[in-house]
Image 1: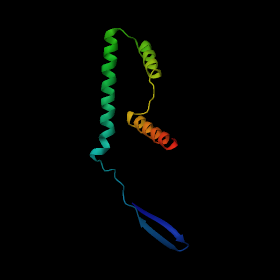
Image 2: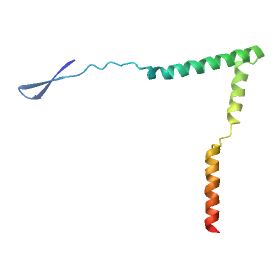
Image 3: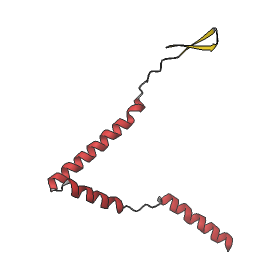
Image 4: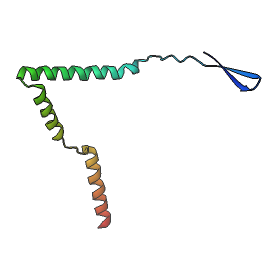
Amino acid sequence: MLRLSIASPGTAVTSFRKASSASSTSSSFHGVRINRQVARILTVRREREMEEGIGKRLSRKLDRQWKKSIVVRPPPSLKKLQEEEAAEEAAEAA
């Protein structure tokens, strides 16, 4: 693409812009693959619910209850680290 701009009266400055083309790499399709896997999992789940006679409304209600029941806890490695630090502080204080 050729761009023409006037720097000052009577002079013209031309600049070339490189046409940007989106190059596709294998990593750019990673998100698509994950989305497909999630869609497949949700479809299987929905089909199972339909076989059991669970309607969409009840399904959403159960899903909300399940999400509310999740308890966020630190990973075991962090818990162990915190215990070690507490033991060191207790040893220093004593």
